[in-house]
Length: 462
Ligand code: ADP
Ligand code: F6P
Image (cartoon, rainbow, N blue to C red; front, side):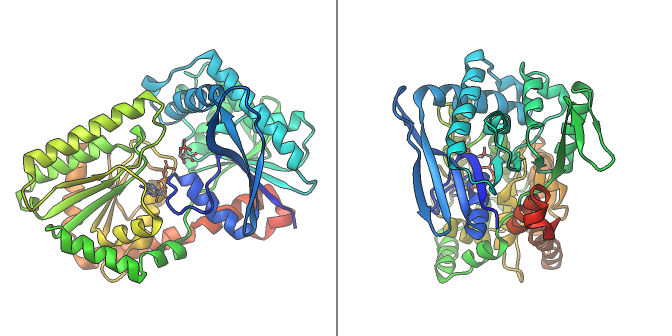
């Protein structure tokens, strides 16, 4: 059996259960099941010139091979090119893009260094699975070092339409680099179409009859593999005696009868200010909801060295304070805003205890929180999912209340609909959603991608 080698910028700490970020959560689940090697950054930043030694750490069947990053790499590759060029571009926020040649140089340098350290660890039968926008040029670098093993790539974030990607000066280099992989995985059909369009409109390419894409003189398989969660494990977490206690405390301590929950990294793509404004609008439009409903927003810090993230934090703190000031009372706090990571067990319990799951990103590759909310519900008395049409998850989760995250009134009305929805309708929507979340779970995602990448080893799922 071939060994699976996963490469991603961030490697989750396999001991921790408070990790946030879809990639860390999904890969942690996937690797725990298949075993293998997980290579990437250990999350530490060291002084320039320091020795970048790889540390190997084994937990169960997974070995983590991690390296620190120098201050310069961190500034140029991670904060710079990854999070001030690629992230905003792929989330349609060209107003936040800050391109500098030094960032691009740093990006190439770190991809090259990553290739150097991985080559040392590879076995001839390995199957290599690279993740996300930080490592777009890794396959090209590995190929340049003679690596012949199959290499796949999964993009966790949206692939933007050509008209947007063209704003990045090195757009052709980026897309051409992707053709060094054997298989490209995207979250949704819309992302695949955007990739195909770029290849044909700007790489003199076309889609072959078997679905592969040919451009820049090379061919690659490009398909949608929507990422999922470990449904059974998450549902079980929401049903433990500890979870019951969390739910009981939630209902006993807070005066309100109903709770709305949002859980997101504090990222400008998540639509958090719009969400708070929609909650305020709900209280304005439906006065019976005052003292009756709370919004619990859990938003841990993320990428705090990027200016746009500091601004969003200030905006959100201002908004929650002003809603609480305008509407709150000595015995009712409308908005509960928690700015830190929470144990996954507690999150699962909170999802189960809240009547509405509010997931309204302005743009999102998939959004695992939407799927976790569905998995955590009590099937006899489920809550309602309100979901942005611009989350990848909306391509599949049709039975959610689908909203336009830019339209405050639309969200407010969906909240009212969710809070007053009859039990029968809640049950039938939830049943359909749960079936969809189960059908496309983490195992299905991993197995179908690997079947496409290495049919001889994993072909039963092809
Ligand atoms: P992204 O990858 O952009 O962060 P996703 O919704 O796909 O967005 O994934 C986020 C993951 O991080 C989910 O599994 C979610 O439960 C987890 N998460 C988000 N916020 C927290 C938090 N405060 N504490 C613990 N886990 C969190
Ligand atoms: O899922 C999108 C993603 O960018 C992942 O690649 C990443 O692990 C997560 O969000 C958290 O971001 P970061 O690793 O920059 O803290």
